[in-house]
Amino acid sequence: MKISMSVMIILTTLFCVLPFAWFMLIGKNNARKKEKLFKDAVKNENLSFNTKEQWNNNFIGIDESKNILIFIKLINQETSVLKIDLKRLKSCQINRKTRDFKKENKMETELQSLGLELSFLMKSEINTLNLYDINDRFSEDLEMKRAEKWQTLIQQSKLGVGENKRAA
Image (tube, rainbow, N blue to C red; front, side):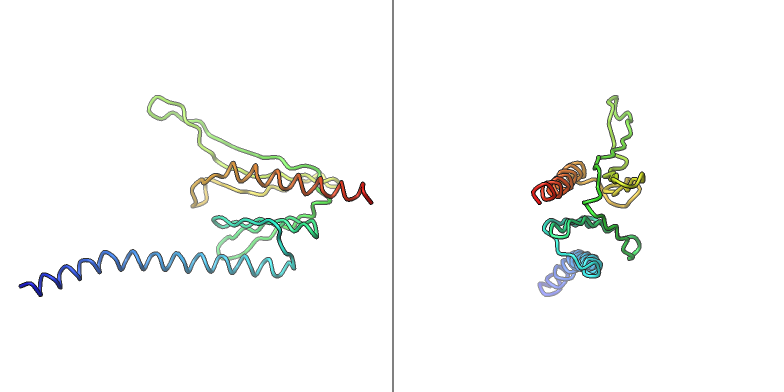
């Protein structure tokens, strides 16, 4: 009787623990695959980053020696690479879209999308780095702080270029 009870306890524990361990393993493998895709895309661009960040399906980094910003978005296992020469950048603004709704007699604000709008000196076009979109499968996680951080880094890199030109 004790043996059969012990076997039941062990089997029940295994049935609870194994699926959890299996899902953790799958998640780690997916994260490694994503990281490898980002590394391969960066290697193809021949850049080395002083500052970089990876979250969800996005990667952003600045190569200060070449003064280049790179933004990589992973869509269906394909990388979309946007390479920007910071010497040609005119401005960087945060574009935030929200939606107000009523929840339990209180007004709530929900972030719909968040991006960095980059305008250039010679072109009238504007590139937008989409940092967050509610339609993606990912939840909001300190996206506004991330946008402010990268706006500051881009502006500092842009100013650093101007200072180098003035010193020369």
